[in-house]
Image (cartoon, rainbow, N blue to C red; front, side, top):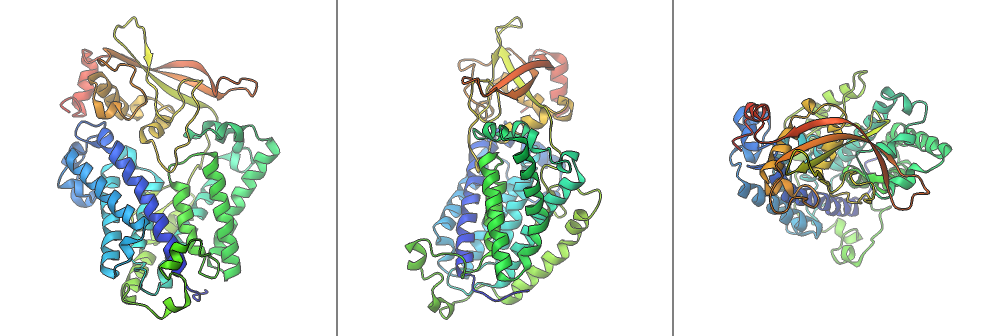
Length: 488
């Protein structure tokens, strides 16, 4: 192992870019969490904490579940992450640095552990694991320790290699090199470029699968190599993530991977890109002598020992034939297991929700902000921002609503005209009064032909997904009561 090298710039870029990821995460929480999990949301946290203990899912919301507290924590996270972006959190000594990054971690963990269906994804726990390590990086006035940098490389290895090995064990299309012929059309939230990626020739799609295997299965071992191999591995990882980011909307999964990949580089590789870094003295030779305070080395040793200990279950899962994706083995999400797209959907189905004043119609379609709906509508490019309910609608289309009971409360909230839930969707087709009836249908979607200049999609009706429901329907009301949703 090579522990030499200076990491002033490594830490500088890592802290500021991670602050940017946290900023988007809290912005999403401010805009969406009340509609998803607030008092009148789809999965209210008031119900969650009636049935679980604090240590089952540690969260500040265990003590206060009000919408006001949701807003407070969201804004607090935005303010601290904004300060991290411009360097204020690390400009005034160790105590402020540690407290700032610890607060970001604790507050965002509170959202993740209370977010239920809508926060159960790999990028959430990945941000928390990365954010935990950031607590021990130290302020800009202290000599950077190599140990947190190596722990970030260990995280990057598990993230990339775990994603690669689950593909080989999973869908056959990863072995016969055909996955990319389906992926761009069936990914959860396509962007405007996804249509063009789908038009790529078969040979290039097959090559991209081989490139994926190379980056995820071979390159991770070089994260721990000598500088030239490590730098090369880091550059290839960055290029790979940028390609993925350009192909669709995957929340901040690939963006935070880019942030972690900064750990592959030391100051001899990273440029002083701006006069901002030079003005702060970051990376200059005299900074090596001008160290003040910092996280005690004994603490970094303890953190390293904790990460090694907690890595046992994730590593055992990674080498298991029954490998699972994106799972935490401790309620604090300190060390997790990762993986992505172990299987690829071949056909894209979409749940289309419609409302009407009368059972006979006319029926008006609810548009969502990100997921495919009207065939003429251009897919948006939003990452690292993320529309959480749109992503869940992708899963809902894969099987019956009985596997996704939250969708029944979504219908309930639309029938009630619940403002915060309606704001999660696109333009409201019933701005004056909510509809009397709501139904849902399943459509099969395919990209439009290159000759069609007016549509992004073509779709065909497949089946009923939900029958027409109203708040006067006794069976519907009984289901809502059984889930304790009706009183909310």
